[in-house]
Length: 87
Image (cartoon, rainbow, N blue to C red):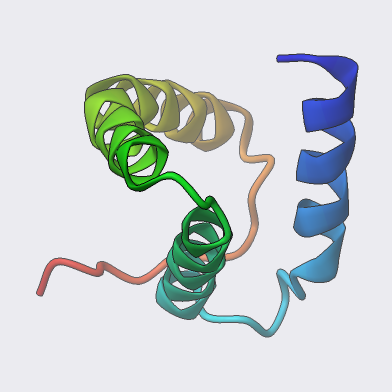
Protein backbone atom coordinates (compact mmCIF):
# COMPACT_ATOMS: atom_id res chain seq x y z
CA UNK A 1 0.00 0.00 0.00
CA UNK A 2 1.11 3.51 -0.65
CA UNK A 3 1.69 5.99 2.15
CA UNK A 4 -1.42 7.90 1.04
CA UNK A 5 -3.57 4.75 1.21
CA UNK A 6 -2.11 3.93 4.64
CA UNK A 7 -3.06 7.41 5.84
CA UNK A 8 -6.64 7.04 4.59
CA UNK A 9 -6.89 3.61 6.26
CA UNK A 10 -5.63 5.08 9.52
CA UNK A 11 -8.22 7.89 9.39
CA UNK A 12 -11.04 5.44 8.72
CA UNK A 13 -9.82 3.13 11.49
CA UNK A 14 -9.72 5.98 14.01
CA UNK A 15 -13.27 7.02 13.06
CA UNK A 16 -14.62 3.68 14.31
CA UNK A 17 -15.54 3.44 17.98
CA UNK A 18 -14.19 -0.06 18.53
CA UNK A 19 -15.67 -0.27 22.02
CA UNK A 20 -19.22 0.57 20.91
CA UNK A 21 -19.68 0.01 17.17
CA UNK A 22 -20.98 -3.41 16.19
CA UNK A 23 -18.58 -5.13 13.73
CA UNK A 24 -21.42 -5.89 11.30
CA UNK A 25 -22.50 -2.24 11.35
CA UNK A 26 -18.92 -1.18 10.69
CA UNK A 27 -18.66 -3.52 7.70
CA UNK A 28 -22.01 -2.30 6.34
CA UNK A 29 -20.83 1.29 6.69
CA UNK A 30 -17.55 0.51 4.93
CA UNK A 31 -19.40 -1.17 2.07
CA UNK A 32 -21.69 1.87 1.81
CA UNK A 33 -18.66 4.17 1.68
CA UNK A 34 -17.09 1.94 -0.99
CA UNK A 35 -20.32 2.05 -3.01
CA UNK A 36 -20.52 5.83 -2.70
CA UNK A 37 -16.89 6.21 -3.77
CA UNK A 38 -17.47 3.93 -6.77
CA UNK A 39 -20.51 6.01 -7.73
CA UNK A 40 -18.25 9.07 -8.00
CA UNK A 41 -16.36 7.49 -10.90
CA UNK A 42 -17.65 8.92 -14.14
CA UNK A 43 -16.69 5.90 -16.27
CA UNK A 44 -19.08 2.91 -16.10
CA UNK A 45 -16.24 0.53 -16.99
CA UNK A 46 -14.11 1.91 -14.14
CA UNK A 47 -17.03 1.43 -11.72
CA UNK A 48 -17.39 -2.16 -12.88
CA UNK A 49 -13.64 -2.79 -12.56
CA UNK A 50 -13.63 -1.33 -9.04
CA UNK A 51 -16.42 -3.67 -7.94
CA UNK A 52 -14.78 -6.68 -9.59
CA UNK A 53 -11.44 -5.78 -7.96
CA UNK A 54 -13.10 -5.83 -4.54
CA UNK A 55 -14.73 -9.16 -5.30
CA UNK A 56 -11.44 -10.64 -6.53
CA UNK A 57 -9.64 -9.51 -3.36
CA UNK A 58 -12.08 -11.32 -1.02
CA UNK A 59 -10.15 -14.63 -0.74
CA UNK A 60 -6.94 -12.79 0.20
CA UNK A 61 -8.81 -10.54 2.65
CA UNK A 62 -10.31 -13.59 4.36
CA UNK A 63 -6.95 -15.36 4.51
CA UNK A 64 -5.32 -12.26 6.06
CA UNK A 65 -8.22 -11.75 8.49
CA UNK A 66 -7.97 -15.37 9.64
CA UNK A 67 -4.21 -15.05 10.22
CA UNK A 68 -4.68 -11.83 12.19
CA UNK A 69 -7.54 -13.31 14.23
CA UNK A 70 -5.40 -16.32 15.10
CA UNK A 71 -2.51 -14.05 16.09
CA UNK A 72 -4.80 -11.99 18.36
CA UNK A 73 -6.23 -15.16 19.90
CA UNK A 74 -2.74 -16.48 20.67
CA UNK A 75 -1.53 -13.20 22.18
CA UNK A 76 -4.89 -12.29 23.72
CA UNK A 77 -4.42 -8.77 22.31
CA UNK A 78 -8.15 -8.42 21.74
CA UNK A 79 -10.23 -8.44 24.89
CA UNK A 80 -13.47 -7.66 23.06
CA UNK A 81 -15.44 -10.70 21.96
CA UNK A 82 -16.82 -10.45 18.44
CA UNK A 83 -20.17 -12.10 17.85
CA UNK A 84 -20.70 -14.47 14.95
CA UNK A 85 -22.16 -12.76 11.90
CA UNK A 86 -23.09 -15.87 9.91
CA UNK A 87 -25.95 -17.08 12.14
